[in-house]
Image 1: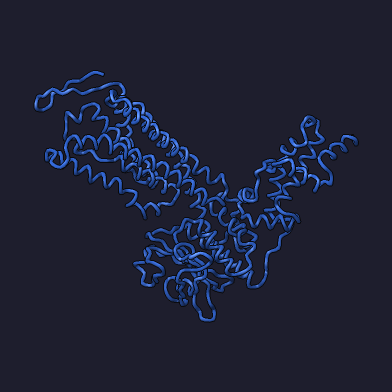
Image 2: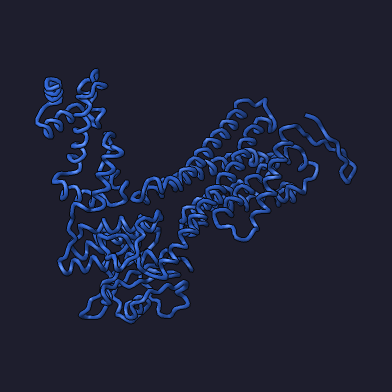
Length: 576
């Protein structure tokens, strides 16, 4: 370490303590701050990118604040300390805000932003109090106590909050993946896997931070910020990597959203969508079966989920529970029209109105023509109200909200009900919500009509999902995995597990397990007579074929071939 002597305005000599580490750290953080500052105010940045830039900017400011103390600049110019703020408590808030905005769940963060920001608010007030305390020459808190707070309470609290934010973010992503569990696994993972790695890395850095603190506690002779230098360099590398990595994924996400928006707008101009032939007529719908976007995946699941529903109640509650729940909405109510009284009756709900056991909290009836929902029913045209406060038709149900989307459920120009959703935020609903609601309303109307006419779709051997399942078994041989289940298979096909089970039961005459075991037995037969497996034991061949135990292999093999594996091998050898 060497010193650089400067003359302050009062001609008092002060030493600034420079070394290669704090110089590198100061330059790296300053460049990062300038870069983020320049980017943040560019127009056209989406919300996740802005939060990412703010997070990295303030994280580097935190390091700069400590580096200025380490070098001695804050001692040379004490007025700089007046500008110090507890940004270390704001950074975790921005980190969480980025995550919620990235997975399009920002409404949850907005709803609870005060709780997320509370640590920063408290420490901001506390920092202000400490500064006033210094100006009044430590009237309320002694200098020693104030130093202890800055060295102990501040850092330990910041570490705890940073660690918790990383764990919280990981939990957010895990919960998001579970919510989207009925969409293709690869589709969700491509979007979230990089984030989970990012949060795990932050958790690891926080643990290193804790080890540095423990090291300093156990070695009182060690002083200064020297032990922090490697840690700060790791954090700076993390922030720079997060910027580069995050920008790459955000760019990919933006491109996908742009392409998806074009498809949605094209579809909305000519409402002829589907490819879900199990429910919709080809003449009614323009096929988007081959689309890889979320709309197709969601609707495919919904259509197959409704396949075995036999009553109106089952249909509307399945729509509310399995459909709306996957769209990230806080509220949805399905109204069914009572033709006799010409009123709309709440029959199913998702959100605060759902009491469980297919019961609705304080169900209401709305006359056709009254309120936003009643107007949609009367005109049989959808309405998207961005601010219900400006619409005198708005009827408060369980609580007052800010925006509303209502879509009529119509079959052959006959009103059957209304699909209605509200949000606590203005301008919440988008073209994508509208498109999905139109399709779900059409799906619901078609299914309700089938129930009323006792006209159910029959399964035939040319069922596209049955063909895809058989092709998957034959080409990729997933049955070799002993953990293959009905749920993982239905996830692969993007259909409900109940629908896949019915397909197999009706078209193969057996259940899922037996159907898969048929392929495993066929595979085992080939191995039993294959010279390459001559040295394999019978049990080993069973495990290779996908069975999870010797007894399961023997039972299945004898059931499907009439012989034990040993007898089958011996007979084949005698014939050859």
